[in-house]
Picture 1 (spheres, one colour):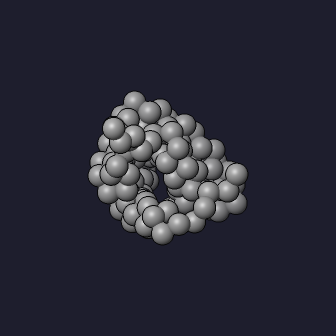
Picture 2 (cartoon, helix red, strand yellow):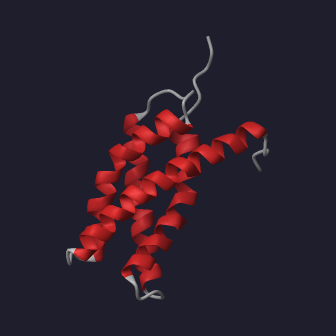
Length: 130
């Protein structure tokens, strides 16, 4: 079933990708830093992913899904799943793109699309007024 595109949904998507851009900049900077140090791309990915989880929780919970209840354990669980999605994406993309930086960036974009739906429907569920 398709979700209707409302003004509120567009605002939420805009906020999500604003936060995602900041989160991606942070996470990708960490990934690139570790790769530049000579660390294996998969080790660099898990290190940057772990550092990004806490950072991302605050940006998404405070900027995007403000009217949702706190869900730290669901957030961590989704990010564990998201890590494996990103890892699979990186492994696949690295077969076709030689640059570890570009491969990491493409994998990040693919994982972010799935991440929006997981955060929206599993982690940050709107509070019921009452």
